[in-house]
Length: 357
Image (cartoon, rainbow, N blue to C red; front, side, top):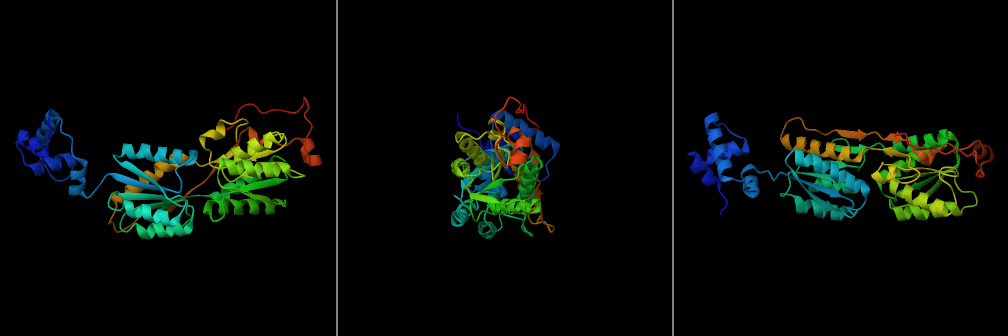
C-alpha cells in the first residue's frame, strides 16, 4: 500500500496542507476542532511525517553531532550511553564521529556535520583542538567538553586537578609513602592537569615523586606497572591517570608477585564499569560518566532552542570527582609503614571484604 502523504491527510480532514503542517509540527495557531480532525485523519491513514521534508520546513534536523577523540573504551561508551538516553527522550538522533585525537581530523569532522546537525558536542583533550572546533562550527551551537576551562564558551570540564589531589591525600592517609603516578600522554590537558595535582599533593606531603608516562590504555598501564615492579624499591602505591591504566598496572604488579593492596595500593580515575568488577575492586575518582553525557546533551538542546537570544549561555560547568573507596587501597599495615618494605604474608594480615561506594 502506498504511504499516505500530507496532502492525503489534508484531503481527509478537509483542511489545507498548511493547517496539517501546523498541527503536526506544533507551530502556528489552529482551532481545537481543526487539530482533532487532522490528528484523527493522520491516525486513520497511518501517516508518518517525512523527516527530510520536516527539516526543510523547520530548518531543524533533530540530529546532534558528537565528536570524540576516540570511539574505543568504556569511558566513551558510557558517555555516549548517557547522551543517547537524553537524545531519545528529547526527540533527537546522534551522529558520532572520531577525531582520532587529531585537531585537523576534528576540524574535518565538524565541517562534514555542518548543515546536517542542529548542534555539536566536541570532546577535545587538546586546547588547540578546542579552539579549532569553536572556530569551525560557524553558527551551529557547540558545547565543548574536557578541553579545559574556557571563559566565554559553553563547556563542561572535570576538576582533574582537585581529583588528583584527593587521590594522593587518600593514599597518604592510608599510610602509603612511595606513591608513583602513571600519567596520560604528553599534550593531553586532562593528563597534564592530573599530573600537576599529583605533584602538588606530593609536595605538600613532603614525599618524593615517581612518574611513568602512559597513554590512557590498558597496555600502557601494564607496561608502566611492570616497569615499577622491576625497580629495586617498588612503590607502595600507584595513582593511575585513568581506570583502564590502573587495571593494566594491577595485572602487571600481580604478575610480578606483588599483592594488591597488601604490598601496593592502586587508585584510578573516572569510575568506568570495570572498576567495580576487577578483584580487588578498584578505588577511583567517580565522575558519573553517563550522567555527565546526559547533562551535556540536555544543555546543548537548551543552547539550540535559545539560539539568537540576547543572553547566551557561556558558562563553564565543572564536574567535581567523588572519591570511591574500594579494596585496592586497603590501608598499609604497621609493618609497611615502619619498615618501608613489603610485609610478610601472615595469618594476621587482614583482608577487606565488600566495597564502600
